[in-house]
Length: 331
Image (cartoon, rainbow, N blue to C red; front, top):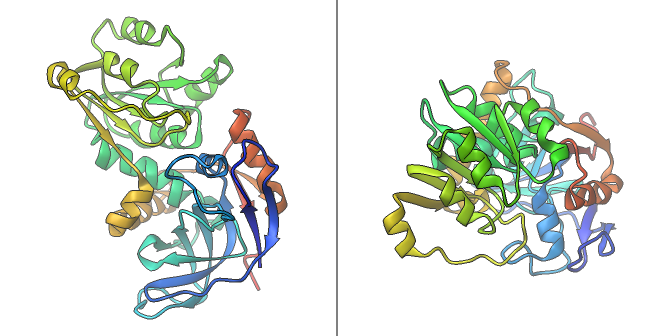
């Protein structure tokens, strides 16, 4: 089969190609999926760079979220059938013609939901759903600040959080050119991530601070996050897009700040509590099927387009979420 492959760490596409590799076989509790669509995500970039905890074994096939058709089921799988359309969180291996997935991280695509729409659910939208409903536990009336607000996860967070009554959504972006993108996503206020961020946010809120900060930048902006919090506010770190070394959080500061700092990783959760991830996928798919959510993406044709789209994410020029169409839906 053909698969996008990283042959070694790189900050560009020099170590990336489409290679012919052996088709995997499912083990107990797994399914083999013929991939019709796969999402392009910033995690691909972090894997390509060789960031700590994202990739250390080469070559590696990236791709964390797929939609496709079940081709084969392993032992002890009785809830999924050959020929059914599914989505799956794969963490790696998804940007290929076939991928093996944990059956507990796989969910049926409802009738009436297009596969290219469903393909963004396992990674982007399940992450957003879990952040809003589990990690941050957003409540009525909360003020929520989200870094990387114009990105795929930031856009999904806005769509889910604005359905909660009386929430105030503040988006933070990396460049002024993305401010309107954040506002279009549903953020009432948008700010550039710079040295004036704390003062600008507190001024907008009359000095009261925010209840929740959702930050995928690692600890690079944690000090600012804490200074923007209202009493008993909470920061949830969910990634390290900045690529900078993570700094330990000083417990003595937290003990006097009336603040909480937590973490979220859908990859770690998929190992520790796969059923919770599957529940999130099913919840989002249900919202899509009933018309409450409309995930948007741009479709690109074929694995040969993937490297260039990952590079757009790496340099910050991507304006939309991309999904690769890999194999035909009907055979």
